[in-house]
Image (cartoon, rainbow, N blue to C red; front, side, top):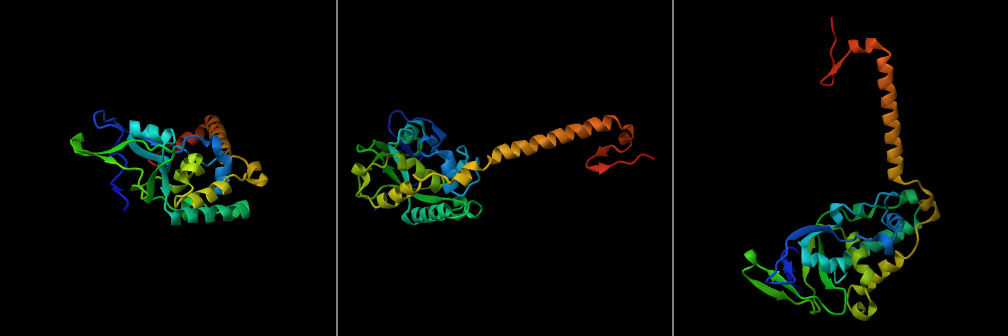
Length: 243
């Protein structure tokens, strides 16, 4: 039976030296999964991927954070969620770019259940720390049924983080390996040429914003040349008319 964890903040690698809790990004390095490709697969606009999103953040103690950063621990979504994510990516690969489905709408933000899985051959030593660190128990990560936890991190970020170190020699006999492998194969594709040729959405927004600033600046300059505009000062969103 899977151990149910209330959250990840109760975990520590030490009983005697309990580290502070911090919030950090789960998936931090798009090097092994280029950002533009992920945006294409996930149904986002080009330039829209936000690695600082709360959907990519988890709260853990500093020593446990290092286990995630070093890919010693990963979060594996449920089989049904992995299938939904894979189906969405498959559709997006074969769809016109303006008809792709956003995975953050197909799988909306909220709590998802994850298996806490050791990604390397040797499992790290973890303890469940009680209130005030007065009580603790060791968490067994070598069981067939991994500990489970519900988190607000999005499955897309959890998948792409864990997939980087999902070695067959360690994971091929686990229930999650085949759906995770299929997702990884899908994400080995490259975004279409049409999508890559699209302008960056943030560049477009900055350009439009810059035009608006220039226009506002121009209008401001014009007002200095038209003193009659001072007869209609705006106060609290309404025009105040002088008699």
